[in-house]
Amino acid sequence: MIEIQHISKTFNKGKEDEVKALTDISITINKGEFVLIIGSNGSGKSTFFNIIQGTEHPTLGKVFINKNDITNLEEFKRSKLVSRIFQNPGHGTAPDLSIGENFRLAALRTKSKTLQIGNNKEFKKLIKDKIASLGMGLENKIDQPMGSLSGGQRQALTLLMSVMDDTNVLLMDEPTAALDPKSAQIILQIADKMNKEMGLTILLVTHSLRDAHQYGNRLLQFKEGAIVRDIKSSEKLNLTLPDLYNWF
Picture (cartoon, rainbow, N blue to C red):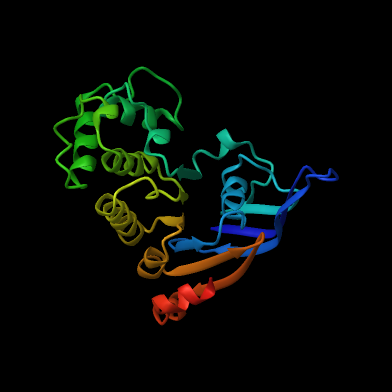
């Protein structure tokens, strides 16, 4: 699914304020894995996501998705392959537009822009059915402005919109950081359900060691621009929460 070959990223190379954000990272993420990523601020997690998404290009190394070299592919050309959710619920939605209009924009993201997409009864039924799966009672409020919803509701809808197409990879960059504990758990449970039922490949950055322990089938720890721990499947099941705290 994702193959990272000897990726390094240096900002301001050769200048006094040069920063080595990533150093010689090589890793393969298999289809259907739910990977939790932890690490202190400045450890390279966001730069790693940026390189997969295409908002940054590596200084050295290669990036492959489905065996296709996307190292220098522009971000907008990766939109069918990679979706991303940020920690601010407002980043993934247009607050002045209705729920339905936001879903229409999501449907247009990777398709030719025609006025017909999202303007029919079939599309409205489709998004109502998707929204109903959240169990939040929002399926009958698709004409309500997105900005009138709570942060948790908006983030849950953003999660649904991110997989409107058959995306290959979902990047979740601290998606619960701005949410209350109850809403945060709902978002993680939805992601877990998508991973298990849809086989969606998910990479999720979190600062919550409890969440890193509870969710996912693989755990990566970043430190100073490198992956210092890669804990898989059965080994992750045997980890205890105190083990994770001791890493820090």
